[in-house]
Image (tube, rainbow, N blue to C red):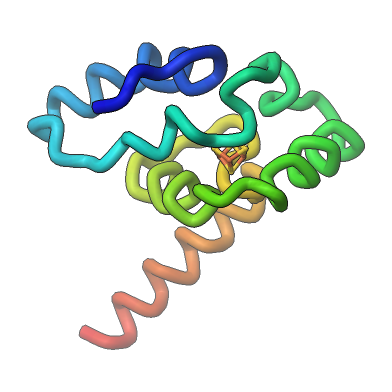
Length: 105
Ligand code: SF4
């Protein structure tokens, strides 16, 4: 895995246990090249809608946003802006996935 700094390092530290439980199979190299890597992590854990939009503007220009979003969805990351999505948006996505899975079974 590539070296990570800033935000990516925080993410890696926080979710190390999850990765170990998963056997380390989840791809996380994208974390070292995200636009947020040199920015304050607090930007991506906003306390209001204005803050969410500010973080989303950064994510909108990030070329690893899809990998970031998939990671947050797979790992059920509840807090913060990931892959340009708010907490509420990810909850909706997960609900839709569950409904879709239930319907297709
Ligand atoms: S999509 Fe946003 S939170 Fe994810 S790596 Fe890129 S800038 Fe960081």
